[in-house]
Length: 313
Image (tube, rainbow, N blue to C red; front, side, top):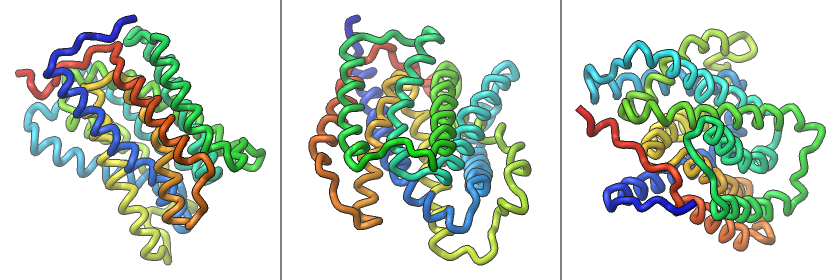
């Protein structure tokens, strides 16, 4: 299938989406390191509650101030928004954090390349996209590049991490469905408004997440743990959801998801600095293959970017 002939304006908007996705991968690629630090004092459910509470409050206030009456969605869109909130906020956050707490960072990174596969399948079922051979080869190259690092130290799924790994896989499936469900709404609403509402419609879950074993403010939590929470609620929460929404009106769902291949590379670099680990043997080759594969996928749009909702009356 031929690549779409995009106009200069569409190409410029698509380039903006790609830049936004790169920042998303940076912020989220460091998430496992800060998450492991936070888990020394905070339960996974507590971290999820912090993300939903702060994200909903900040994004809701900012969206209302920026967009005024346009902040209110149509009643008919509330069910889809609520479903996006359930899949993309509550279940996505909770499953990932519970999986990360039970597994290791390298196992979580190893499973990340499943997200574009799930997203592509869901997008095809929803008839949003078709897939051609070059894109398939690009994903294969990127997956192979990530695998050189991820498998270099024998990162197999061990029995001690089985439950955590399964939770991460479930998280990725929820996130893939969320990606596809979100995209049509982005043609009607500004990304900031949409992101705020999926957070707000998840706020009902906060009391259910917290409890004696998962307090919002644990006793004796050190400064390092609170700094980790601060990073988690600002960068892999508020900024990544905003930037993902911004990108999804500029690139296709599977293209956005394909950038997940970059996260393992970022996690490795973060581990070198944070944990003082040795550089993996095939790191340079792996990085080149991963970036090359993502570039092949990203440069062949098979779904035209959406018209920006912010430009509509």
